[in-house]
Image (cartoon, rainbow, N blue to C red):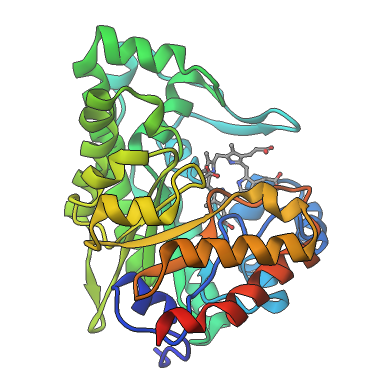
Length: 354
Ligand code: CP3
């Protein structure tokens, strides 16, 4: 493997000194980019794009050609995992993801098995190898998966949900059945992420978009414990380098203190907790990633620059900050506005690292 030319992202995740704050953006490959929409049209649809390693590599590289980003993220989706478990994923334009066979009963959940990930998800690992070749050591590649609870919401509800009625009913009325679901998804995710690491992923992020919709104790029992189980099962070092793990629980707030004890290297923070407060919660035990409100990207370049300045100031001096949005970039954003954000991080962050 070629030497890594830019390792500021990996160093920051390990809270080592860096000359400036590294930056990447959740959903950096996506619909706000016209060149993404063009390749997606060529692939036919989103799932076909995920399943085509050459095209998945192409859209992974697109944002890196436009912006001075410090990491690439594998182009895929968190719902490829339940798809591999036989739930039948499909997307309805304007409605988001759906499953043909949701799992709502104790029996359906008992019948779920850890799939043969090499056979069912080999296209993902092939995409990872293809992207690593194309990156040629320029920046590290992030692999990812969803948290078992977040993935579980789609498996149980059958698609996107606001209130999560079915999975919350399981948590209240049949918690041991939900434990079982968390367990089989966690075991699959360990195999899935370890195969991404073997294929070349240099850091991994677990997206826990919906975990904080649970009440505190339930969050710990279902979402946090299953992420802990994944972390315990992951390959943590490869080719002499640590493979950092980032947990992103949207809306975690004070739960960040508990999440810092899971053995992860870094925590994603959304914009509802400022970084100074988050830093207090985790007591510099882990690095922090975030957290500008994605809505700021709709404002003028001057306002975006001000938002970047405030985010950097909120984290303050010292190592352990990776710049990102507090959640993914939305499809309506002007690509030049993301350029203003990335340039501002490069220009304004060095003074926090002297
Ligand atoms: O960050 C990246 O650039 C990597 C790619 C990535 C995608 N999805 C691509 C995608 C990642 C990391 C995800 C994670 C994901 N997928 C999450 C967790 C992160 C988060 O944003 O909270 C969730 C909940 C999903 C499930 C999912 N997939 C949803 C809700 C949607 C949106 C449906 C819609 O129509 O808005 C998707 C589709 C999806 N995943 C798109 C992309 C670029 C849009 C698909 C398209 O091109 O139409």
